[in-house]
Length: 398
Image 1 (cartoon, rainbow, N blue to C red):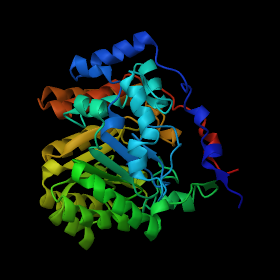
Image 2: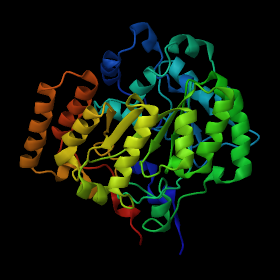
Image 3: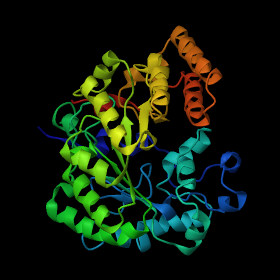
Image 4: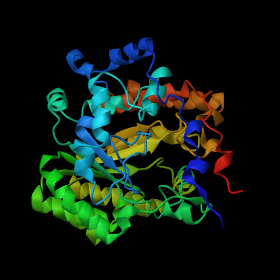
C-alpha cells in the first residue's frame, strides 16, 4: 500500500489561517482583560517558552502542545539544551518579550479572534516567578514528553499519530512517522541530557500514546528518583495498565495521574474506549489512588455527543472520590476526528436535560474547581451550532 504523509492527510491550511498575523488589537485587549495574573506581568504575551518544554514522539521540540511549527527536531548534536538556550525556543521568547505571538502560535491567535479562551492561560501559572525568569532566561520548570504512539486502545476520536492500534488498522494508509525514542540509543542519550534539566524542574509530564506501556516511562522515573525524588511526575493515561512497574513508580516516585475517562456508564465506555475493559480500568483508578492519594488523581474528560447525556455523573464520581475533574474542549474546537460525535449532533431536548443536570449540580455544590468545569459544559452546550472545523473526508482511505 502506498501511504500518504501526515501533511497530505491533515493539511495545516485546513486548520490554521493566522500564520504571519497577530490578533486584532481589540480582541487582544479583551483577552488581556481576562488574564488573572498581575497587570505588570501581562507585558509578556505568553510564558510557555520561559517555563515549559515539550518534545514529541518524532523528536520535535516546542514550547507547548498547541505549537504548530515543526522547525527544530531533536538530534544528539543539537538536543534539549540547544533548543532551549540557542534554538527555536529563543525565537518564541523574543516574540513573547515583545508582547507578540510567534508564527507557531496559530491556535491561540485563532481562539483569541473567535473569543475563545486560549491555552496561554495554562502557562501563566506554571511558574510563580514567571516575570523574573522571563527577564533573566532561566531553565524550564516543566518538561513534557510525548513518548510514543504506542497504545492499547483504538478510541474513535483519536488518530494514528497518537495510537499505534489506529496506525496499524484504520489509519494504516497514512505514514505517521517514526517513534524516535523507541530506539534505545536515542532514548539513553535523551536521558543523559535530562540529567542536567531535572534539578531545575518542578514537574515532569508524560503523555502518549499510552505512557505506561513504554519503557521510557520507567527508565526516566528511575533517574528522577536518583537525582530529585521529590520531583512531581504526572502521567496522562487511559487507566488500563496497573502492573508491577506501575506499582513501583507509585510507591517510589512523587506521582500524579490524569486518567482519560469520558463516562461512568459501561456501555458508553465500551463505545468510546475500544480495547479497554470498564471494570478493570475503574479498579486500576481506585488502586492507584489508594497509593498516591486522591489529591494526585484527575479525571480528564472530553465532552462529545456520545457521552454528554451522562457527563454530570462523571463529575459526581470525581467529586465523591475527591478526584480533580478537568473538561477538555477539543470537540468544540475541532480537535476531534469523529464528526459524528460533535456537539452539534445533540437535539434540543437532550441539551436542556444536560443543562438542567449541570444547574442542579451548581446549586448543590460550592466547590469552585468543580463548578468551573461544569460551567464549561454549559458554555459548550450554548454553542452547539458548532460544526467541527475542517473537512475530515481526507482522513479516509482512498
